[in-house]
Length: 454
Image 1 (cartoon, rainbow, N blue to C red):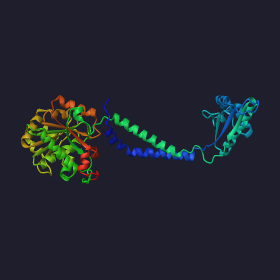
Image 2 (cartoon, rainbow, N blue to C red; image 1 turned 120 degrees about the vertical axis):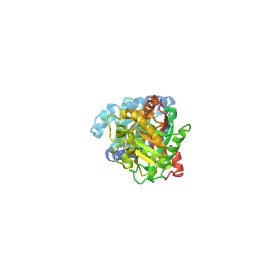
Image 3 (cartoon, helix red, strand yellow; image 1 turned 90 degrees about the horizontal axis):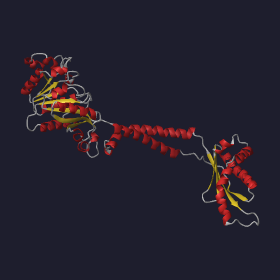
């Protein structure tokens, strides 16, 4: 069983803040409506009776033995007070529209511990009637007991008074219980979701669990970025936090190849929608800004979109190049607005992308590109169920696997690593994309100050 990280759970619980508010509000409103408009007020009257046993011969005060005998018999008297004989007589005397069985449900008659005192409690919707019933029970009960047991003496210690307030006015308690139940329900649901959550998170120790290092982390959102549609963040917003994240990733990659020059990099992901094209595009810009001659190649021959990111046409690209003479390479290379950065788009979507990428012509193409550029970055397809990027990973120096924080499945990431390991790919590490800025204390304190504000 996987160990639960309490700190991670409370961070995860923040996602359910709105759910907590909504469920608590619904619960409280429901309780208030029920208690004030639906629930009928019930009034409760109470009286007590003391039962004493006397020999009745000389009128002497009851002895200690008589008192003890009365205490032992008082439980029998409580049952007698609830008998049909007593209740039917009370119903008849007060002309109540009920029967003994229904009547008894609103009565509580019990002895007070270690005494010969009987407590009688009556509940009714009518406050005056509840008091009348309690007093009438004492009167009828006393007469019937004395008739059967002449030696028993009974005295009503307190007359039942008409209650002023309902006994079931529990609004405050019910609100507290409603809030507690709502918190438990939402918290329990969140815990189950968290426990069963198979997604990779920035806080996970993936090196320990999956044998993969973290090559970089890209934060989610930035106040400096004006348009959500902007994808070339490093070029348009060089001082944005995301740009700094990309530059850190570039530096980390340079340190992974200390024994040889880093010339070719494959950027892939486990599934679609994790941001591999965003990472590869900005990483290419970052290397170009650092003075390297960079070529970015769109190897996603199924749904490539680098031409959209850079605003280029896609009439001819990699697929067209691999089905033509490599000596015409230059016409497929497209310059961009960024100095030192060129792009080869994916071109026409072919029916056999895996075969094209595994071809000898593609292997020769990669060697040619290495001779003309300092860094060649390949934007591959997701690894899930496709061989394209697995093939490319065996032809490049390093492979980056992009995952989306809290979105990518650990199972999918483990499968991706296994696929890459089978072909001997050199994995530079995992890039966590769209990391919540509050998931790491470093970013909130360094960039935003101690208050966590931007």
